[in-house]
Length: 260
Image (cartoon, helix red, strand yellow):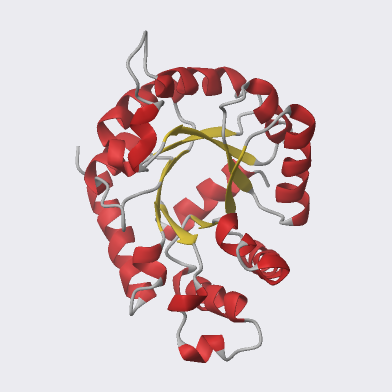
């Protein structure tokens, strides 16, 4: 099944547009997890088991696994394999973007070694740096469009003929020959999200930044549309009760989605 198929199926089954980011940090793990033989996988498994009926996707950020070397990457592979058994899609947040032959190697690692259903890519180097990812027709490609970090204004929204983020959205629409593209738009830019949604149509939009970054949940849900994927990471996985926090956010997303 394609990424879009898995995403829509999970969203319908769980009545959810919530994506949980698995951004691990051993310093924040409880002692019982740290004492296990595989702390990273054990932590992720607990989060997954508690929230599997509340999400439309999971999004591990590869940086947090690379930081622990070979062990971290092995735990990432084990985590994605575990999620793959559930039917919930995995978006591996890697933000790759390089010349064509290097991009092809990145794509092979993400989709064939880590076995992700989708990934994030950086369009700064142009179409040839994104094309090797797009050529995996059944995989999802989320192109960074308008990010949630403080520095997004330096380039993405800079003055000029038109902001860079609008140009990116238009290019991604042109690149979407196989129907597997989407964009990343931060919840901290919910007003701009409305204009981006108008450009990209029914593509999935990955929307980070509603948790610890304090983005606009209501605006993000309403402007994000049916395939707006609301991501939260630290605010859920390090909460005293991750399931309760995930359910609260899932239900809030659903409530806002019903407001005209």
